[in-house]
Image (cartoon, rainbow, N blue to C red):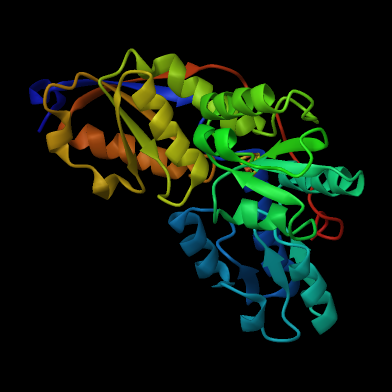
Length: 317
Ligand code: SF4
């Protein structure tokens, strides 16, 4: 069909979107480890929550496993961007494995804060999502019982603590900015002396991507969020879009798009979670262009210039 006969579709493309500095670094670590040590390089857990990224690294020689027990001796292993409990590198060292830690430096910062607060004798209320690897990793930095998970405002209303005047809070890095503010408000109301090391630990990439979605949500009829169903920050982008007045759908690839979604739709917003590569955004736009006469406009909320150093020994690989 020539564009002349296609229905018009305006695309508002949120920026920033897609890869953050932590994801970029984690992927680079796996690639450089393969270059330096040769394939295979083992990776404990999905390096980042994106199937396309994982499949691409598999094709280059990475092998993804759930636990360290599945890593043979004498083969390097990389720990994912979400961070790992302290017991994991300790076990790797015990086995004499060489390992590379791709934990995002912003997650590592939360780990160090947790340790410091517990060493000061404080109990931590940790705002996060049960079972997420980042939460498992952060809880694994401190002795059992020194941190309590708070997921919702209801949890914040009900949580019981031994010493209300000796508390601190920390948060997962990929939470909803608005939900976290509501949970924090409740905690501060119940425990006025709760120590806040910072406002929260939601990272720049998470808050920028949510802000960019908010900036275009009202102007679009439908928001497509490119990301994985197990990606916390991608799921939050869907929620932010819906709360700000538009329909939103999480898709992993262009092939999941159903053109029936576009009945009566004139303007579509597009964004991508922090672990979704730009190639998948382009794939979605190209796919839409097979059916619609698309116009593209990028709406940039803020320019990101964050970059993290690679672990020592890999820079020169
Ligand atoms: Fe790091 Fe934030 Fe990216 Fe997670 S989303 S890897 S915390 S920069």
